Length: 308
Image 1 (cartoon, rainbow, N blue to C red):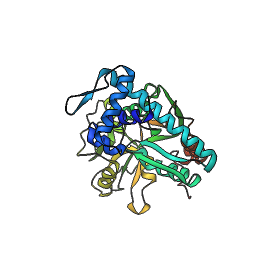
Image 2 (cartoon, rainbow, N blue to C red):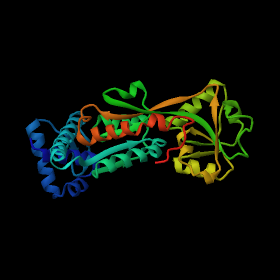
Image 3 (spheres, one colour):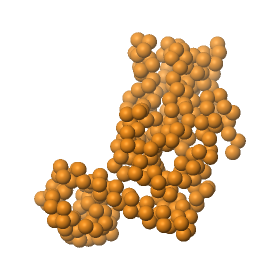
Image 4 (cartoon, rainbow, N blue to C red):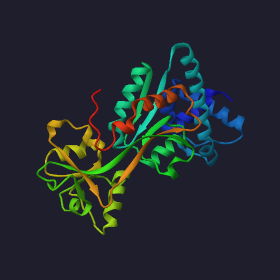
């Protein structure tokens, strides 16, 4: 068995197309097919259903694709470790972020790249908690920044980063002017724009409204944070979101926030790493960069904006 054969197998599984997989591996399609056939012969199983075109992985292929990804990931980590000893930390770090954590990931990426100029970051955005967990377990990501429940953390190494508090955000003309807090019932009376139902943020919001027997019907449903905040800046709608989103807004927008109470919702954001890959040099460097930033203090609700 050769690593190149595993690369062909993973490429076909990812691309779901033999020609595209061959192009990705910089080989001819016959050479790629021959390499996979040899791998199947050595393992004694058929990995890919095919007649004239790719028709999916066999049950044996589905079971072994994770092993192939792990072997290739650890091989890359070994090469990166040797390179780190000789030249400094480098290589490509595959980082996943959720819809709202992409905003705060910027500071962490900046710190990592400042410390280790040879590192390259491949960013995958808009991942749900379940998708993040699956990609980490399948060695498709090295690390992720997300809200992960205890069930989602199985098989992962987790480093707490900060806590987010849910707040009502909007123009002063829309928000209640009788204090720094607002109830969920009051928020439900406002014209709202919210993220879609597939996000963990929206699910928490819906759960809070349900606890008060409130059916929330947002006038606008956004697919991304940029769209969400663009509608809020327009002044016609308010939103409910983690407080860290407003921390990244320019003061010129004039947006304000009210902490939501009854219930008060806070949720922990973590840096999650595949437990088998956490010792890779770039992953260790990311964890060290996160620790040095002390995001828990910098991003806590009510903290003064960072000046760096």
